[in-house]
Length: 363
Ligand SMILES: [Zn+2]
Ligand SMILES: [Zn+2]
Image (cartoon, rainbow, N blue to C red; front, side, top):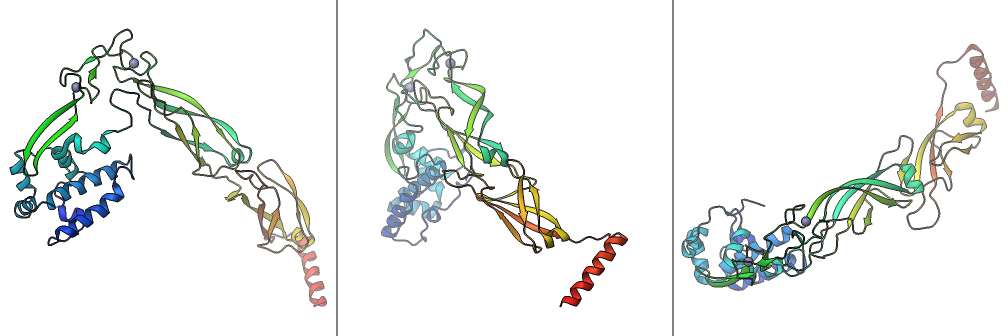
C-alpha cells in the first residue's frame, strides 16, 4: 500500500473521468461508509483507504481543483499548494499534509483516551501447542511471552520518580498547533496535535531511567494458560491482563492465545471423534476376537465381531474427545484392515487348502 502516490484519483473513487458531480458524491459516500473509522476502527488499512477516498473526493468535487488535476495531475495541486511532495509515498500521506490533524480527527484518538491521559495497553497474541492427549484431558501450559509491560519504576508515567512533567515549550502547554495554509485546495486552518508533546501539552524533562520515558519496559515472562478439554486448533483463549501494559494508569491489554494441536501418530481428529486404523488377521476377522485398542486414555478392549469385512468401521462409544462445552464424549471410529498372510508354512497352507475345499463343497 506504499508508493501509491501515482494512483489515479478517479480510480480511487471508482468513477470514470467524465463522472458528474453527483456521481462523484455518491461514489464517495458509498465507499467512505465502508471504511469510516466509526465502522472499521483500529484497522490501519481502513484508515489509509478512508484518507485516500477523502482526498480524492476533496479534489474532484471542486470544479477548479478537478480542472487542475485533469490538466496537470497531482503536480497541479503541488504547485498551487506550494509544498514539496518529496518524501510522500501515498495519497493518504497527502491527506495528512493537506488536512492535518484537525481533519484526521476520528483517527487521531489512536488507542483511545485524551492526550496525556490514561492509555490502555494493546492486546497481544501468542500460540500454545498441545497434544491430542492434552485436548482429551485439558491442561495447564506455561508459555514464554515477551511483552511490553507497564514500567515498574515509574508506574507507566515515564517520569523519573520524584519529578513532574513540564509545559511543552513548542505549544505553550496547549497540546495543539494551529496552522493556516493556503493551497489549491483552499485555505485550511488546522489544529494538529503538537509534535513536540504528541498533543499532551506536557513533556518529560527527566525521563525514567528504566524505560527511557516510554512508560513501558520489555519483560520476558512465563504465563500459565489453562487449556480446557475439547479445544480445537484455532480456538483462542484469553488471559486477562497479560497484554501490553497501560500508560499513566490505563488498563493492561489482554493476551489472546491461539491453540495449535500437534498431529497425533495414531489418531486423526474428526471433530469430537477420533479415527484410527486396526490390522486384523484374516482368521480373527472371520472368527471374531477382542483386541486391546489404544485410546488417548490407555488401552480398552475392542470387540471385533465374527465376519468383520475389510474396510469395516468399528465404533467405540465414548472413546473420542470430550466436547468443549459439556455433553457426551465423541466416538472412536476404527477402520479395519484385514491382513491376508503372504508367507505360509506348510501346515498353514494345508489348513487353508482344506478350508477352501470345504467352502467349495458348501456352495
Ligand atoms: Zn519507567
Ligand atoms: Zn507541545
